[in-house]
Image 1 (tube, rainbow, N blue to C red):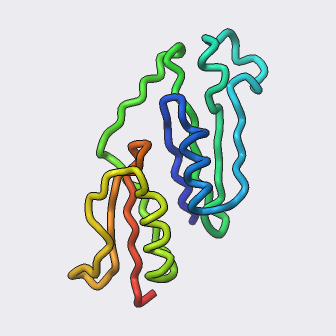
Image 2: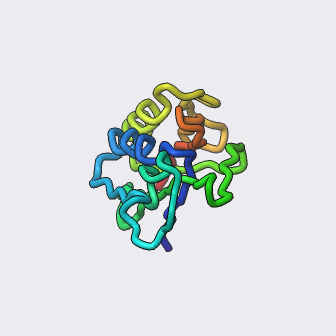
Length: 139
């Protein structure tokens, strides 16, 4: 089983994914609304929105997203009902990912050794996406 989180943004999916690419690397795929035939009339500002964005973040795993279209009744509601949890292979990689993705965001819990034995931290990035970084030294 693969975990491929799919995120929604309010017109800044490509900007968010260029930021994520700066941390994870990989080849970014971006398809704009204006590239899709048959999408119909869109307000000018929505034509540059992302229809689909994807970025490889692991072995066969993708982080994916699109922008919501207000003109089609899609309303983005930012909330605290989800996190993307990443399990890196080392403490160093955990710190690198945490420091990279949390830049400009709000740290909820700094990276620390936790009572359950893992090295863990959580934050909301500058785009409102909530992340957990959890390194288990026993894996």
